[in-house]
Image (cartoon, rainbow, N blue to C red; front, side, top):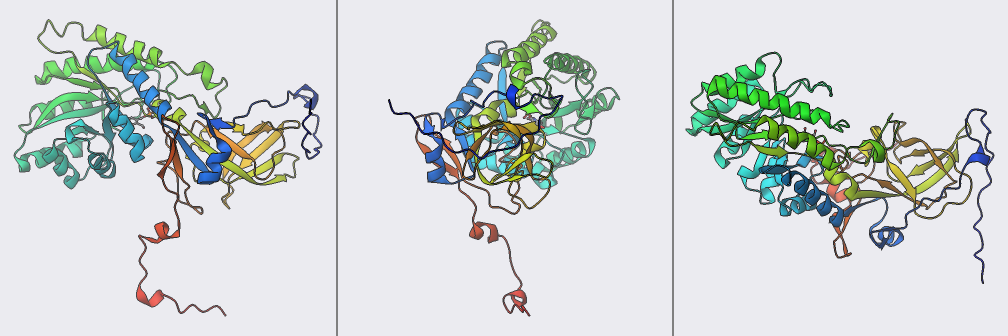
Amino acid sequence: MQTRKKSWVKPTITQHGGSTLNKFGRMPMKDYIDTIEGVSIASLVKDYGSPLFVLSEKQLRENVRKLRQTFESRYQHVVYGWSYKTNYLNTVCSILHQEGAWAEVVSIFEYEKARALGVPANRILFNGPHKSRETLQRCVEEGARIHIDNTDELYLLESVAQAANKPVDVTIRLNFDTGYTEAWSRFGFNIESGQAINAAKRIGSSQWLHLCGLHSHIGTFILDSRAYSSQVKIMCDFMKTAEQQTGCVISSIDIGGGFASKNDLHGMYQPAEQIVPSIEQYADAICTTLIQETADREAAGKPRPTLIMESGRSVIDDAEMLISSIVSTRRLPDGRAAAVMDAGVNLLFTAFWYNHRIQPTRLLEGVAEDTVLYGPLCMNIDVIRQSIMMPPLSVGDSLVVSPVGAYNNTQWMQFIEYRPNIVMIHEDGQTSVIREAEDLAFMNQLEKMPEHVVGNHQYD
Ligand SMILES: Cc1ncc(COP(=O)(O)O)c(C=O)c1O
């Protein structure tokens, strides 16, 4: 039998800390990944370059189907709205619309994106604190579902509806203390202070606005599903009060998003795998409370409200990975190992709050040691990981960062570097680019130089 020659590993001197495990207590690192859904990572890098975002169509479809089935098997009227800001790549949105998702948007840009993808206006939930008169005019004209955020917007919408001579069905966004989450009081009307019921009454007295929906988004990455029971109970109590006091009939309760994904937040003591509630646990908390709190509606001749959800990160996060290559290695003066990757916080905004899973693409030999992973930016803040145990890395090694599907392809920055290709692995294993890497022509297309500053450079 032929034995494989071991590759040479750079020798390292490792300090033996008295309080921590020394190198004799460490296990070799066995974790590595060399394919994604059967496609070799080396071939992806060869064909599409590095860094590279890789989206899994299969995972995305599975995630949204699971979410919808879990809720639809517990409550009869459920609508799922895809939160565009989480990831508004056209391919991602389109797949989710194929799976029955409505669009949840928070700006005219996102609204136009959804419309351009073919989403009917009455399947668009329009949230957010900034809706101009022109935006509201368009929404009223096209019949989008407007979620009013504040009193100024309420008056503006009323005047738009009046000018269009078209009464408008509206939802109001609420904020309140669930007892489990920090209240996001900067959005919507506050229940405890009476602001929310005043808004409902004001709408009740308007000829142009009809209150028919309630919305709230209690926060993000919520690890205690009891927060959702509390949210639904508070919203149902408010629904009853608003209906009694204004004569409106509420036909939908939108609970926003917030389900956690399987990512490790900075400072989280236990791994996400152990503490993130399952979709079933979230659904039990929400649907059980909603069923209890609306039990007497049918007898009163009112339909049970439609449950609307806007879950973002839990649907997309684990459907995308980032492949990045090591471009240099160094030893820091304090003895720690460090490596520079070709992807930094410019591409991975979520590195500011997550410790992503980071896996090599080959079995790394040698002793794992405390390593800092930097990005390529000439900026001190560009750190993908302050501390990770890794055997020595070499230039050209690839690392796979996951899950990265939520809030990176929307919050990434074009800063210093071009943004890279995004490819999708189709359900049948084919791959294709779904967003091309940027280049200079792309970067320059919006710039305009006054004629007198063109050329005539003086370098002396
Ligand atoms: C109104 C609204 N809905 C849905 C979401 C999606 O949240 P998540 O990704 O935490 O599910 C957000 C995110 O901030 C939001 O503001």
